[in-house]
Amino acid sequence: MRPTLSEQIIGARRVLVELAAPEVSDSYTQEQIAFAAAALEHAAARWSEVLPDLVTDIRALEKVLGIEPAVLEEAVPGVVDYEAADGYHRSLRAQLTDEIMSGSEPSPAVRAYLADSTERLK
Image (cartoon, rainbow, N blue to C red; front, side, top):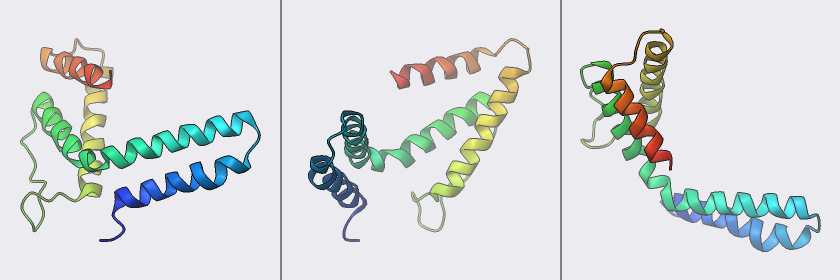
């Protein structure tokens, strides 16, 4: 598919930086354009990692929650429907939240998962 998603994101960044930014004199708006341009650059570089990272987190949550791993692949092996995976991930996160909010002491597996999640954010 042309343009690729990365090319589209880089194109949107270029519009901001090359066309919009020079026309703006307000410093706050310039800062916001720079922030948006940086976010788009980051997204262009990382978008292809989103689904694999999501699947990895789903597998970790299933293990922590003691749930049998779901079949995520559709008709083409190795290809996952992002919307379905995202919805499933949200339901697992809700289950984890319910477990944490129950007031009981979190299991060692839950504590390890939370520590790992925190470390990945750094």
